[in-house]
Length: 154
Image (cartoon, rainbow, N blue to C red; front, side, top):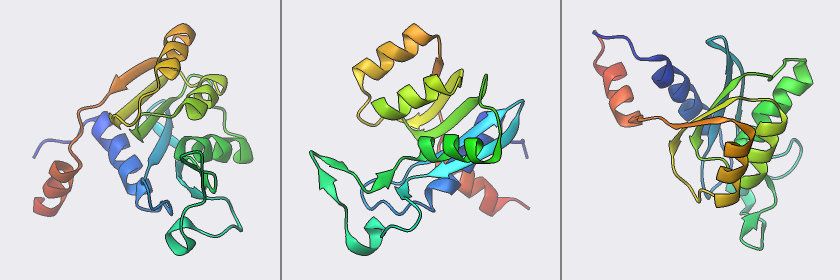
């Protein structure tokens, strides 16, 4: 059996993290990688101490749930909390980052975004990524195929 690629490995981690999401609208996971080592991970959900959307419903204002902190921000903040640098890192995300996450990724010095699914891809976010020189790659990733390989491994 062939080994999975680095992209598949890190994207699988992001999909696994998304299973911890407490958002009932979209489960997202993010993994920050440096030198082929996972340095941080995050998923979207409520901040520490607040109620979870899956328990009490979303708190939607102007079409956005204001209770939720996004996976990318959670992963970046985890690095900050534990003193792990993000300069030059790669972030693997299950879905294309929103505008605010895009700005945070750029400011954190992350140099590459790898994502599996398009989701409301913001044109200004794309423009900022291009201006900042951040590499953006849509990774061809089939989560069902990876799980099937895992289940059928002998």
